Image (cartoon, rainbow, N blue to C red; front, side, top):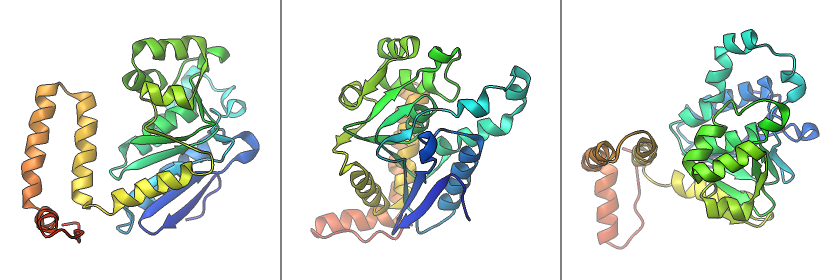
Length: 258
C-alpha cells in the first residue's frame, strides 16, 4: 500500500512506521490515524514481521492533534464518528509488540499514541505532556487514563491540570518510558529491541504481551490464574521444548513459532 502521512519500512523481521508530517511537527490528523491503522493491519498480517516500531523525527514524535482540522468540529460530529475511535485504538489492539521510539515533542495526542505502544524508548531530548487544558479541552484517546496507570495519580494530575511538559529523565524516573538513549542512538536501540523480540517464539511473545496487559485490567488473583494457565500452555509448544533443550545443550534455540 502507499501512504500519505507515514513511511512504512521493513527491516528484516521488524516493521517500522515513521510519522511523516514534518511541516506540522507530525500533528495527528484523520488521514494519519487512517494510515497508521492500515499499516498496523498490513504488518500484523505479515508473517515475516515479529515486532513493530513507531517513530517520528528528531524534533517531534508528534506535537499533538491537528487543531486546524479539529477546531470546527461539534459535539454531534465528534459523537457520531465511531470510526475515529476504532482507528485511534488500533495500535493498542495490535497483537504483535509495538515499541514507540520518541524524540522531541510527544504532546497531547502524540503522548497518547506513544502510551498506546507496549513500551517507549525515548531520546534524551524527548518531552512528554498532556496540554489539552490549555486549549479548553481534555485528553481524548487515553491521556488521562494510561498516564495515570503509568505514572500514578499525583503526577498525572499535575501534568493534566497544569499542562506542563515532562522531560526524558523525569519520564524514565516516573515509569512513563522504559529507556532513555542519546538522540543518535534511540531509534536503533528501539529497532534492536524489536529485532530481539521478533527472534523469540511468536506464540510465546503473544501470550506474554497479553498477560502483561491482563495485569492492568484484572485483580491480582485473576491475573495469577491467567499466568499459570499460559505457563502450562507453553508446554504444548514445540518452541518450549526447543528452548529448554537448547539451554541444556548450551546453544542458541532455533524457534519455529509453533
